[in-house]
Structure formats: C-alpha cells, structure tokens
Length: 204
Image 1 (cartoon, rainbow, N blue to C red):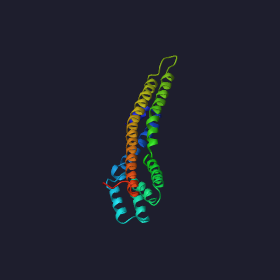
Image 2: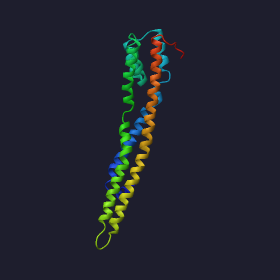
Image 3: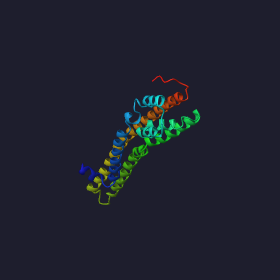
C-alpha cells in the first residue's frame, strides 16, 4: 500500500483525505438513517392512544419531540391541536422541513466528494503528464522520471474513480432513503391532523 502511495506521488494525498472523509460519512449516515430510529413503527398509534384517552401536555410533547424525527413532527402538530387545521398543517410542514434538513446532514459533503474525486484524479494525471514531458531532454528520456510520471498519472486516475463510484452510490442511496422518510412522515402527520380535527376515524 505504501509503495502505491509512493508511486502515485503527492497528488494522492488529497484523494486519500477525501476517501477517509467519505468512509466516515457513509458509516455515520448508515448508523443514523435507520428506519426504526427515524420512524418508529408504532409511534403514531401510541401517540393517538395517549391523545384520545388522556390528552397531551407540554411534558408529553417535549418527550415526544426528543423521541425521533417523526416524534418531532407529530409534537409540532399536537402543540397546535387547538388551532385550525390550516395552522396545525403549517406547523407540521415547518417541523418537517427542519427534520428533512437534519436528515440530509453531510449528504452534500458526500455528493461533493463523489463529484470532486475524479477531478482530483485528473489533476494527478496532469501532474504525471507534466513529469513525463519533463523527462524528455536532448539526450533522450530519463527512464526513471518517465516511469514515475506514468505511475502518478495512472494511480491518481484510478484512485479518483475508485473513490467517486462508492461515494456516488451511497449518496444516491441515502438521498432516496431520506426522501422516503419525509414522504412517510408527511403521511403519518396528515393522518394525525385528520383525526385531531375529526375528519377521519383512526383505523390503526
């Protein structure tokens, strides 16, 4: 591994840094964006049961908001349960935007790495080509410098592409996952609003 880094020259270091950051972000998002953590499967039913039997107070709503992103959205709606349907819906949508922004945390960085890694690899390729042309002299090419230039060009290109592909795949995967969570939360929040305003029976 060290021999490859040596052969690739100094342009490989930004790529290695990008790869470390990408791996850290992928692990962090994989742990954070678990369905059971974002949208607990029975949370809405539990909230409706408590609301219909005992009602809710500020302490209950504070605990609900800290439970999960879905809980935060539902709590925002229930805080405005005495207001009109429109006001309650606005509160839910505002909380939903905040939650969605939080769920997309670090995804922009991961997407940037996916885009920038091939460019960093191309930069290394250009550096390698410069070394190749620099090896030319009136007395002939310097074989050692020529070989090093080729190594720099090829290794950086390969590493750049190797980083970009998984980073792009995971970026798309997590983005799609977040979009799915947002849609699910919107549906559950809409059901809560309908039940609170007596426009739909709870069939859960």
